[in-house]
Length: 64
Image 1 (cartoon, one colour):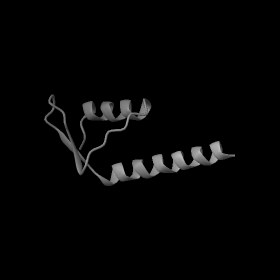
Image 2 (cartoon, rainbow, N blue to C red):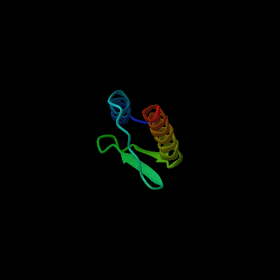
Image 3 (tube, helix red, strand yellow):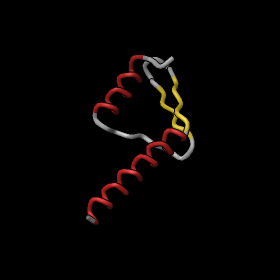
Image 4 (spheres, helix red, strand yellow):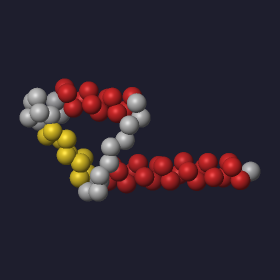
């Protein structure tokens, strides 16, 4: 289970639209609690797909 400190970090990233990514696996460790959380790269692939869609939509708008 994610500790309160990592939940705050995730909430901050969501609130400020900050994205964290890596090649394969992201491992985040809370030094205060010793809790470790891992996010698979599939999350990064989802983000990249969403960014590609947004860029394509912007290009289509610019061409009109």
